[in-house]
Image (cartoon, rainbow, N blue to C red; front, top):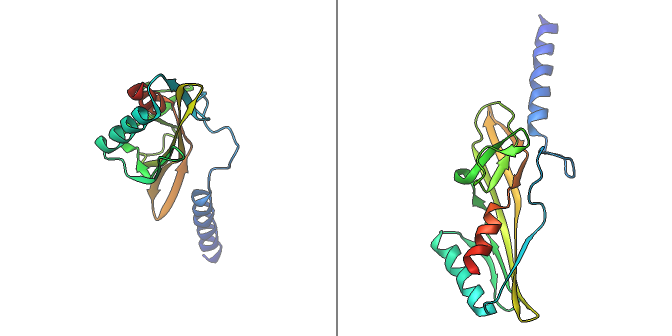
Length: 168
């Protein structure tokens, strides 16, 4: 009886320890190739026009801003939920090509939270306004039995391209 108890306890602790692990940094986490660097585009509009449009787009979409500094051209969002704009990966590609975030499909229940933030940098270079957009700190989680299980997630590049197109 004591051996059975110890075996069950060891199994539970092993499962709990695995579930609490963070996803290793630098490890290939998804099969497909996704947006891993900042998306950079340019516009013939002035810095002020692009800045104003970006601020309008973010406020119209209810995105909370953590840092906004027009002098440096930097906008950083608060942590934001992407639960309504994510998809699972199937055979190295997003199931929904319009999703902003892709998450590795482990087939073990439902993803319950997808969140992250983004940085936008706007600057003038050679009579053009350059905008750089990057989703950061993307985290997809499942919860169960008091455990927090992270899943690999990455930007698809759709969000970045949409922002760039809106300000052109």
